Length: 531
Image: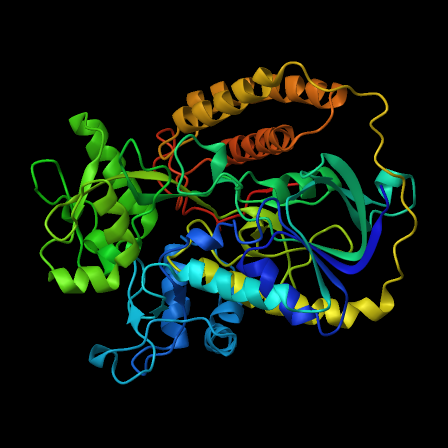
């Protein structure tokens, strides 16, 4: 297959990847890679909003302090200030590109955008487009990307591996491009680039129950690891407290904004319980709310708890949460008069590829932005609606650095084409499906909301066996998308387990019964694992 050459190759097409492409495209030739359709990303399903200081009663310092509090001592204060201070500019940039944010009403002190409040925030500072903010952002940015003459789109192209100097027998370890599976015809292409950016989203599909779409298989984290980049804080997996519990509703999230607007968590008998766990009740950070729900479900032996906002006026509910109202109604749940059955589910990967303040990784020429990166913003627990802000802020920072650096970076050399002369088509696809299922089940059972050393060791033994089996399978058969995702998932699972075993305390999203308290005897440390 012929290879193509670009200045910048962006792997991933969510808010981070698309906004980065648009910020760079006037200065360089850009390729954007999307594993399936361009807009099928975690961003598309983000309901809540984007946190930014816009209200006259709010301050940058307050947003910084809220983020630091939620991050349980592991946020990098300089990074938090860097990101939070760009909130208004990022919102203005999106407005210029036509993102239809919900307009304000009288309660917002005259500001032109409606601001809601979510867990961990002490002020209303969440800009949103009703309850489908991610969709509004994704669709708007995708339209601009499709129309830009300097951006080449590769939809239905699944990245296999990064190509580095080391991998092709050259001195150094600079990234030179990537091998990519075109899933239309199952042919492998070589994409060369002077700079590669990972914007592949998170890894929550490593768990049995998740709010994420099927594409969230940790591809960028696994590819960066295989290329020699360090990975940080993978033990901090955020479980969203409120996913819809219904046999016909896969991965449907009930936005935190429902609690922000007065929704109450109740037991099957209708009694509230969050006051017994935290003075902030429903607006406590997500780790506290998720553990509280998990505790009550196990204590009572019930399959779910309930989120009730039916005490609010019907018109208020329908106007603020039209997507949630419509989806629940399809399942015969009228949220204007009934409580919503909810359970926690894996939602956000706070760790990832370790980056600096310019989104650079340890591998020269390789950047990481968005959920696939560990920037220092989230620490041990991400505060609600800081994720899309991080995507936009670090896309801007990365774009500025890449534009500065490109004139000094030579074009990539000719690279060897993908060699599949020693492999055959698989006649055992059931192995892929079985291993995928096994990983997700033992990760849920042993490496979930509440952990123990015994469970983690059990998971580690299983993941080591599976890793060998998958590597053997990968070496013998032609690649498929399912196989590539499985290969990435097993690496992500191992990184989460090993990181969790290193941390001998409970902090933020990592809670272990063997060390139930936070270690305050020494300064908090990030968990960094390098190949």
